[in-house]
Length: 244
Image (cartoon, rainbow, N blue to C red):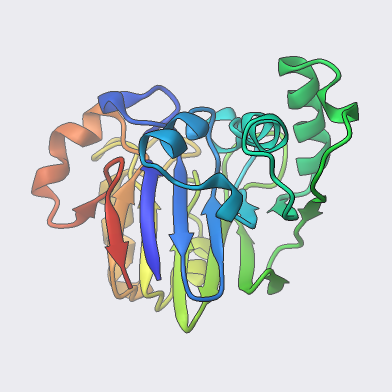
């Protein structure tokens, strides 16, 4: 499994980073985890072929995590000339929020005939969903976004990836990440606890019990970026590629 961070930033572009977008390639699946507002720019910058992406998994319905979907869909329709089916899966409320976003950004875009089938799936928590060669189990976390926010436990080709999404610490996050081959975890601040987000100090206190084999920090504010070199943990950067 090859994992490339197309976007590793927070909502405000701290450190000049793109919004969250993780590109995963394995023998049986090619997919994105989150598709923040800047994701099409990152896809072009890092020369990713959008038509090879069959599935997009969404953690929660904030613009820096799902706001790139209208652009991805319109690119598929007008630029990349997609014909292969595309599945977008995420929390309850995804379809309505996506439709609203598309109509706000590009009025009339949802009514245009497409050359490809678009399948929107809203996932139930703590159930394993099989989607285009991927087994994904969502866990409800704590982040105010007008719909249930998820951490995602993803199993494909014998490897397990967990992404925390945005959340303060909750016990379900430990269940989502337990024993994972890679835990990609938000570390928004270094040691300042804030509502709805993870700070590194709190996260680090829980990591021994979680037992993930590898941890990469992401979604860092300017405060965290100033401290990240001293944490002893790997940190995401736009374009970073790792192999499991």
